[in-house]
Length: 191
Image (cartoon, rainbow, N blue to C red):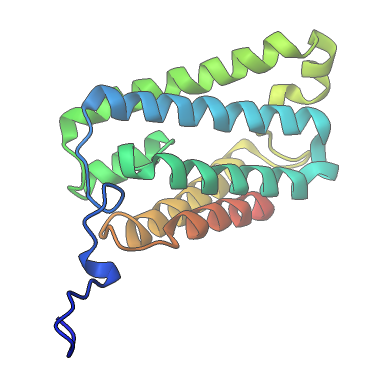
């Protein structure tokens, strides 16, 4: 109460339905992961069609980073917004998710990615898909496969590390989706 006897509420004491943490079923979490991966792969492959190869690196970084920012903001409170098996493995390994959820998350993510790619393939012609390598991540000419593997491992570490320190330990970090999206953009620009 304030000095006038009025009840005072602060942002930390709100009881609206938005501020209450709801527990979602595993099925709902898996649907969120499926939809997130479907969207992520669809946006990534369609932008690759519009801006193929090296000329489109800024577009790819922006499209992927912005998409992950939006998806983590939209679905993060439901499933954690992993959208990547490496992230799910790390979250489970850190004890932030029951280990038995892991195969369901990974299956949902892979199937969502597959459906996103199939959606793109149903829209573009075979020639259009070939011109952009169907949005696949490829190593640069003159780069050995093992160099690409090391580079991808390093940037995956950066992404997972950012997620673990910005989002996995707290429900109050509101900038986590932005940090995750920017990390993904930087990862794309650096590889």
